[in-house]
Length: 555
Image (cartoon, rainbow, N blue to C red; front, side):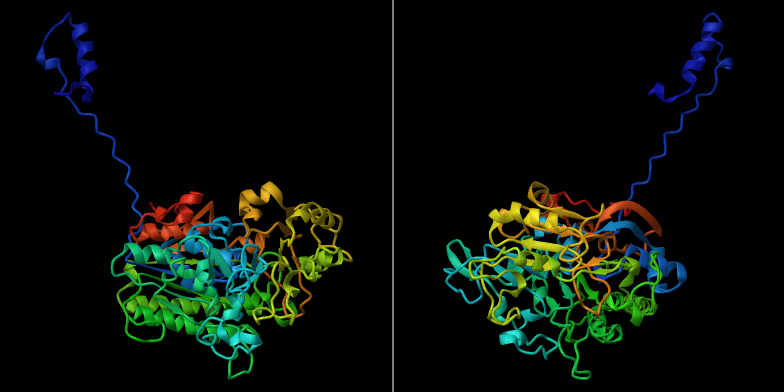
């Protein structure tokens, strides 16, 4: 008998003491047990049979908040009623589509995944035509619409599938264990993806993904090259025979392209592959929407972008959000029709935002970074530098030059020097020209920075290893390194409008809530694995970076 569990012990002792040791049983109170404390309920996160991942390119957190509040996205609002909406989600340092999606699929930042932009540079690689790896090292790696064979020798992009194979002029070489081998996009990524983990660890599982470039997005397969069973080969920059233009000319035309992906998802929910052939329902599948991004980039004069600094959508953005929301509603309706909704985790986020939302901040600065470096003679021995280092002026057409370094810029500047010993001099040149007039790079206010050296290496990796830029220039918010008259917004950098993105995780058993914790889109990948009953540490990047699952889900 464990008397310490009962409250009568000290009471009885006092009574006995007060009565001279009397043992009158009539005065002894009835023992009353102290109730044991009620254990706190153990939180159990969703255990899903499948996960549907949706990336809505350009969707800021504010877009989601505004459209839910004004009734502009009823399907997203419904998902939020059984989900967690994260208002503090950000991309990992850079926000181009490659690092933005890699965050969601690997759990890692560019430092680990090795993806900085779809057009980047690697000073260890050899030219596509150098099959013996005996020429100059350093190659402008271009994994975009020209990665498909349609672009061979500068050809027109006439097929929705990019021509049906890789463009050999887009595939550089590397020395691997002394052997010169080609580097396809899946070889270029430095860490595994959730698709590979699911296939390797869930018997009978199937994976699928659909994105904007038919062959450049081969990297989602991961280093094995086999992570995705059903990778839709769709090219947004291909020519639509019905219009004679590609699908990015106006957002309503982009809807036509995105509808291909909507149909692919519905096919997969129905037990088919993306083309409609018989298959099993994927364990992990998803797609990317481009319509909103195109509407955000469109000039304000044409109705693109936002009408003020608090993300009030202009006509194109408002219509694009309604389109995407309706498309998502079709997917949810099909899941319900197939009795799959109750066991499907749905994750909605964005590879990147778009900058600037406040049109009053917009400054189109031109390609001043490249111009400044060229004007100050930071050239290779043949007088070449950067993206212009081809004899034709075009990329992936067989005329590229090796070892030239390069600049990649949109609303950020990534600089790979052809000669890394020039770093101090180049930094001095940039600092001396950081203003917004003349040849200035417009990086002179408190929110701008020029990152290099140990700080850059700590966040993005050591440039000496070949992949990481030597310098990252984050200009003043609102600055775009372009002279284009066709767009008033861009992405790629770490400006607030680039990096602060929507994130919603929905499952029927969850209680709707808003979570204000600062989280990263890298946390999507380990959360997906956890929901499928797999260890997040099966992802290499999760091990390296210690990426946690998202909070407030019960895991």
